Image (cartoon, rainbow, N blue to C red; front, side):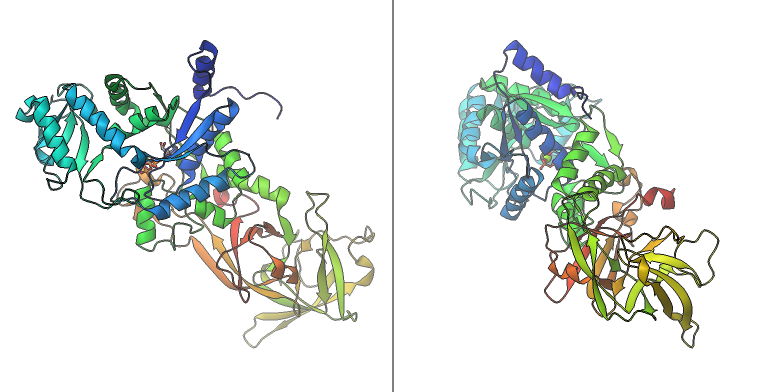
Length: 555
Ligand code: ATP
Ligand code: MG
């Protein structure tokens, strides 16, 4: 892993700008709109913006792009901050300043006044339908209307009246006076201000007019002296407007650069769609462990290290692509394998009585993590009656079946070798119990080279077992490319994405489980404690399976 990674195209731009002296240091920003929770796509943007600044000794602002009062909320502001902090945990990186586009409302207003004074903006009384019709289509040029010729004085007065709340929503807008015949539709006199009598989460009822994204974003970048304003590809056609405003206003020349947004298989990434999943009850909340949100991934047990590793692995591209969800799971699995505490949990119990075991209860030692030499050991109680997994026994076993079968031997993890002597069935013929004998000399760590045993099973003591709830998660959608699939995306929701095991049997040490610890339930997968757990009922989420089983089952 020592070889230098080649630079991505944005790093190349930054290096060139630093080398030429165009910039002596860089300042980036992460500009979320507080209208939803952050998702894995935002994680990519965060890693890019903060990572770039860190690499080149610059800084990054967190700027809430809060120019649409109707959809924004402080709940989202708080969650966004928490999620960024979590994602950057342990890196030493933090935002330089926490800023809000709404803090610039007065300045943005003055910018619009300046454009009007320069004859570069006008108040328009047209309805939104009229504006759309006059704008034309990609193949049909737009046309000027009579409002375009209003005098500077009249425009200034109308804009001041709009600010003062004289007009109702939609009665007027202010538009930049650019070119109704531009080949770029976004340059056909774009709206820069609209009237909205709405409560804003920070400015309250101070404003009746709000700037449009294209008028707020670049100017906010410029006010902060952002050097490299990095956004996703769909903003390429917005770049001429970005530059037009900065040039006409004669303010700091921030520059916009675009990269391909992250799209992932078996999930959706639009906040609108994610909101719909929450509001319509398809998931329990924004942090439902099946959601691609940062809070969902955190609750599911993903680590910030593994999400950052994923973002690093996928790199920065100039073309849209679809990243396999399995790659994210791979990164999670790799990290959890190193840090997870091993524990034994039986999901579907089959009782085993060890007929010749007369020691009452023994405390056996089991290593916490074979990947970590400082991981230590824990005590696991062993008793005459234990549970094994029902699927680890077969009455009629094929050749090369290394688990338990009549007359066959297995090793119990960190305990003894046992042999199945007898099986007991109920009246319907279901197996209810196995009677086994154990080999006292086979205690874990002893030399058992003379005994040919291939399989090792996990188990728990019946008397000491801790009942826990286990939640198993699967892909949220059945379709690989949900966004491209025909019809309503909700038709593709995976009905079996959550499987609850109300009672599984864990070894008693799990009673001390904490929310930050990660566990590997041996032979079962990686798990973490869910926040809905109570003292009487511990709930564990499966973060990811031990191996990538998805590809095999579904292809
Ligand atoms: P949506 O499309 O769901 O409305 P958005 O892009 O409008 O999301 P913002 O809050 O504006 O959401 O995003 C903040 C930043 O994160 C922006 O710079 C945006 O370009 C970036 N971003 C959003 N989605 C992705 C993605 N899928 N991949 C990479 N970056 C993204
Ligand atoms: Mg956006």
